[in-house]
Image 1 (cartoon, one colour):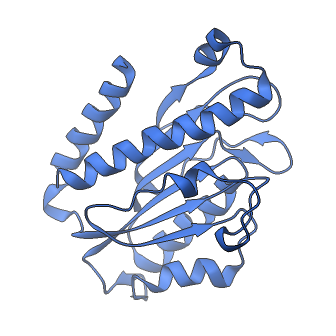
Image 2 (cartoon, rainbow, N blue to C red):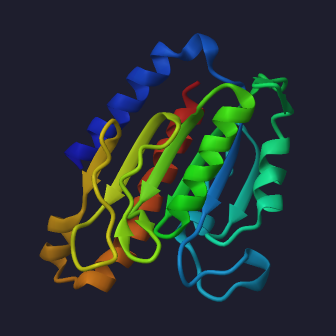
Length: 206
């Protein structure tokens, strides 16, 4: 609880500092990991889809999967109307939540957005990020503020990311008696819940 309050404080400090240049509305994107399909072909629920924020200053939301086509990524980017490294929709910002295998696709989205639009995504949440086939994803995203929620049990796990705010759930999993698989699932849902809370607070307090 104390750590979560600290995260909120860090978010408020950064938000206050950048208040004069912050967008008025946002596009939010959730990129799911292994075992999930597109929402219209639901197979297994994804926390970054189910808990993707939808209130306050959100103009549109996208639920992508780790195998999303480039055309789907481009559809997100078209929202910002970017040309020659400049963003014409200056009132729009970008918030990304990614879980497990979805982290690599989300990192590519953030990188392409930065290149095309000349600014970094506003918030990026990596939730137990994993690179294919089974490597912890420690790549720092192109983002003004980034968070990594992770655990260190078994092969399928995330890691702390230098330059981001990091939250390690390993002790919590151990206290609850979770093995590696259940810990990964727990971090997916609890991490997405906390990320959603942080996004809503970020948007509400603009």
